[in-house]
Amino acid sequence: MSDEPGRLPGQGPGMTPGHPDVIFCPGGPILLRGDHVVQDEDGNEYQTTRPVSAVCRCGGSAIKPWCDGTHKVMRRRPGR
Amino acid sequence: MLTPTARGPLSECVLESLRTGDTSRAADAPDAGSPEDAQITLWALYEQHYRGFEDVAGDLEWDPQLIAVRRRLEQDFERELRARTPGVPEPGNFAEDFFAFVADHDGPSLAAHIHRSASEEQVREFLRHKSIYHLKESDHTTWVIPRLSDTVKAAVMELQYDEYGGGNPHRLHAHLFAQGLTASGLSAEYGAYIDEVPVEVLEQNNVMSLFGLNRRLRAASLGFLTAFEATSSSPSRKIAGGLERLGFPAEMVEYYTEHVEADAVHEQLAVRTICGALLAEEPSLHEDVFFGAWTSLDQDDRYAQRMLGAWAS
Image (cartoon, rainbow over all chains, first blue to last red):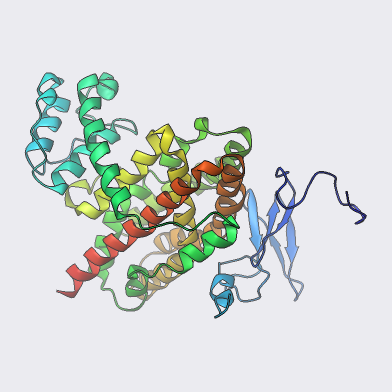
């Protein structure tokens, strides 16, 4: 189905959803399932505390490394 | 909790039936004297399916006369809610369309008022009103779970598990709110403030029960959940800021800061793994997902309008 290294068969947009450990949300955070320790750019470490955690990708969160929904404000530009 | 105070002829009759167990009189119940009368009646009938009332016998939960009254009220209420709902987006990219639908909705912001200028007394009133729902937070969504496919069911459980503290009662969201109430010198007793809440609060609670208790409305329930989660992080941050400004105790602030982080996760799960998956399986539920979502946004607006109006006068 794909030549991309590691790509699982039968998965992709429009296919039956699997149960991945890490999910990249388009225009939003990365979701992490399960227990993880996340290290930020400054070397500080954060333990996940919930079944699924959202890690900020837009850089605008006030509670980094976690997402606080700020990407939704940053994305709202004319023409979108 | 004891049964609430009646707000008109219908609630007078139905509440009396509940307390005495003589439900034959409910069969000839008078019409509601006002929307408030109808909503408090419906709220009391729904409460039978949550934790109930100390002054009502448990076996009245499924009493046919009472269920008949509930069904009449529900039909009128659902008709009204559907009539309020404008056109919904055409099916397309659900996640993108849903976030845009929520972002394009422009309503009055109670959170902004609480953040910047509400008085302590106003915020205490707000917390008393919110206690009706937050002390049974997420329970209405739990009713939907047995009505779902394996994929959607597991996805809802993933979210609900976090709402219920991941199995730790100290982290259960309803418990966090109770702790906040107690620390703020308010009653954390379940349903304590029901007699003082305005009709908008009754409606908001009844919508959740209506969608949760009727299998055919499961998509509306999940749409409601999704819009609720997608409009929670930023307002929760503002409310937390307002509580800090007014010197509320840390427990109350923490309830809201927890929701900044939790609901940034939940909105993604609700849009993608819950409603997205539901609609991939059953595209015909598209309209009901947006009906539920619109109703969530609209209910918030109605309460905000009510309180901002009351506080401005």
